[in-house]
Length: 457
Image 1 (cartoon, rainbow, N blue to C red):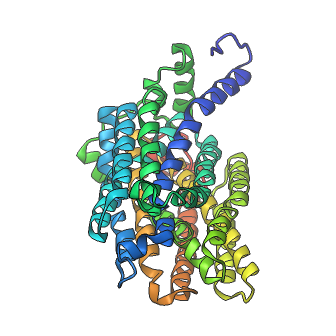
Image 2: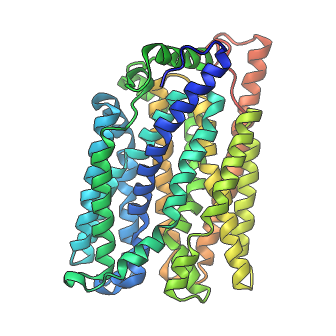
Image 3: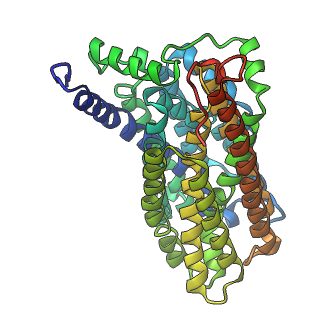
């Protein structure tokens, strides 16, 4: 598809961006949906017999197995982003997708909870680099105030597919006894085989970074790179040296974004790992609990994309993050203290709508307020690594001893939402102060080293 014949630059820009949207986002969304399914199907497998077969009910074994995934997932985010540039997006992403697919498949053959724990560690090793790589790739293709809508659409499409994974997993578990294999094992075997297949096929279609892409004509690539250069001055990647890494890590705002991201991901992981168990505690049986776990993702898709569109349109981030955080808080209170099961279930809709919308919003907030691809690479890795900390927090504070209400875990999740609002206020005030000084011309050097740059509030 070529667009160089278009006379109107606005039409030309719109057509090229639409082409990029269709070429970059759907495949990455599908692959991330597969990553989410492979990450969270542990809860369904637990509910359909794995807990009994592998003796996961004893002590804290299930929480331990869930938690171990996040240790390498957190530690390997930044190294993986470094390797991403070295090997190239196409090669690196294909390798890690196929690798974790093989691990997922192997989980169907484990005979003890110890081997399951080992597989979860390996799953964390290979999935660690996937999400930060995707976020980095997407943010290099678009201008600052185009990115949240794309991130939200990509992320929510992934979650929408992943939200129906418990239904798929339950269907696969009905293969129980076929070839002498347990129902829960079939979940891992079939979903792992699908992951490996998709990873191999995606090698031929994964879009690389803008300057390395193969699907645009040279003049169209030059047009896209000029748009990015005019917007934030980092269309060309700068070398990622250890000196730059330590310099980027010294920016305290990066750690504030990371903590905010942790706060947003915690309720998302709570829903992902414990929604079936929470629904069982509300009185539904296993088939109904699995079926009811999917609907809360449907309105969340609509609200997240709507908030993202408004945020990009108005070039404002903090106010929409705050609104969605308040929605999460209301939902958590309903889940914890409402008397009727239907009202508590409605609370899950609000938790999903708020928390899942905050995740792409915070990524956009952070991406909008930095320049240079080296800092973008470090930032995406650190921020998403702290999302893994949110996963550890979620899997440890929701204890078997608190089943079925999990009140202490819900209050820990609420505490994170209040922390998010505090951090949001601090970063917003900080950005307002430096923007004011930049407009007054009292700075010795431009913000983020880029003339004309202002922080997005």
